[in-house]
Length: 293
Image (cartoon, rainbow, N blue to C red; front, side):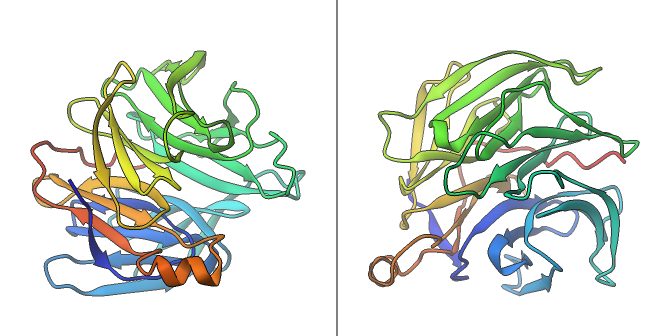
């Protein structure tokens, strides 16, 4: 099973891909270019929006014209029609080397996201947070990390998957669907013997976790017990995030990146930074939960 190039974007850090079932289009970000991207597979049309700083993650809301966005330093709402930005709150102003990174809504519509330490030493000073429906912010009681990634939730919402990409392990913890409390963190999948490190993830309609493996040129589907179920080969080295979409939710979308590649490596890896897809799978994903605020 192989992914096919859909948009030859040459993004330095393509990330955060999500499918909108209302518009039947796919959204993603090129973080370092500070741009939000959108592609309509039916018409082939692609458009983008400039952001005031790096766009690291985002979520849909009840209003189809408005996104919840995670910029490098803050959370805000973004109007797709007008381009206006309405600030919500700043994040980790006391930590000058961190920025937002991965994020996804839990099954109750609260936005769970993490930060990333850009300092060369990669000390684990970053954290996971949750923006509640009333726009209150809380830090999750999880250990400090260097690079947050792989945030997604089990079908019943009672498990939260996440990782510190530097550690090379996808973790899972119990997640109280009422209070949002987290507990009993443990290893879900150890990628030490696999060719890539864990990046963005999503859960399909059968409760299996799909993970983009940065540096591994592949996406891996993990069974609920953490064993490998299947592998999708991606024809570029750095897959970064995955999402299900299409009218039947049987298409897998994969963002990729050329971040950190030398000129020689980019010359060899010509598709790096493209958006890829795997259509007509024999299984389905689920619509993204919209922010409840």
